[in-house]
Length: 153
Ligand SMILES: *[C@@H]1O[C@H](CO)[C@@H](O)[C@H](O)[C@H]1NC(C)=O
Ligand SMILES: *[C@@H]1O[C@H](CO)[C@@H](O)[C@H](O)[C@H]1NC(C)=O
Image (cartoon, helix red, strand yellow):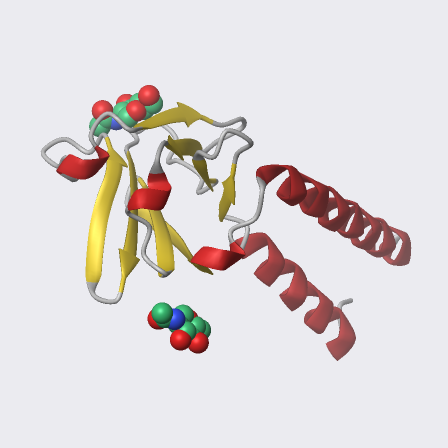
């Protein structure tokens, strides 16, 4: 079973595409920045989140509930965090364009596990476009899973 290099290649692509979707960044209709962090939290543990961005060697904390650390002053009161289903957190940031660096790496950390993505300022996409993309890549994965199911049964 699973002898062909092709299958490993396909599995690799699948893992990479799933991995790169642990964090997504887009701009909402009302011009708020939305960062979705889908890192799984640890069961039976108090979980914490941390959202930040960095550019060059400067990193700024946007929102966190790690005890003892606090968001940078310019982000205070400008962001909200809500829980996502089945796991993860969504952070929305108002008025982000004033402070957005040109090339920004968005980072999130849930209970010590982090994910990051770099997006250029001009390449931020509207959230409505992202959901279309996710839908098409999901149906692609469903096809693949059906394919595996079929060849192994
Ligand atoms: C952070 O917020 C989440 C969701 O509201 C909560 O479950 C968790 O216990 C909080 N963590 C800390 C360290 O306060
Ligand atoms: C942003 O990143 C791209 C590619 O990573 C690079 O070509 C470009 O020069 C960078 N722009 C700035 C202003 O740093």
